[in-house]
Image 1: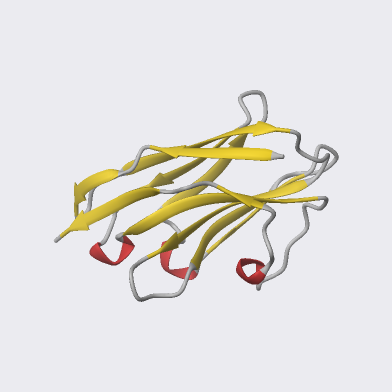
Image 2: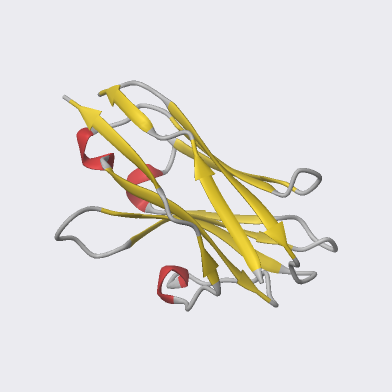
Amino acid sequence: QVQLVESGGGSVQAGGSLGLSCEVSGRLSTRYLMAWFRQSPGKAREGVAVIGVDPGADDIRTYRDSVKGRFTISWDNAKTTLYLQMNSLEPEDTALYFCATKLYGASHGPYWEEYDFDFRGQGTQVTVSS
């Protein structure tokens, strides 16, 4: 069993920055995906960013087109914590953000947001005002 707990959400004006954290506990596989998703009321879940963690290779990161150049995903293996640094925030980024993990594999394709992730957190709210 894996537990994920997000923190760092809040309210910010457009153009501002926020950093999210996701503390992970439990047993992870050797290779796995760690991802951030977001969901707004009445909208489908969106994959924001994913990182494939493989101790034998460089981590591969993929971002949603609308956040490229503004958001950065990172993973601290020593702290088992996933991060999402969000800069130049826009009102359209307003959503509940949650982290998730998919075990037993670090590779991913362009449709990664459609994968069945094994565990997820409860989420943290991000609100961006114009």
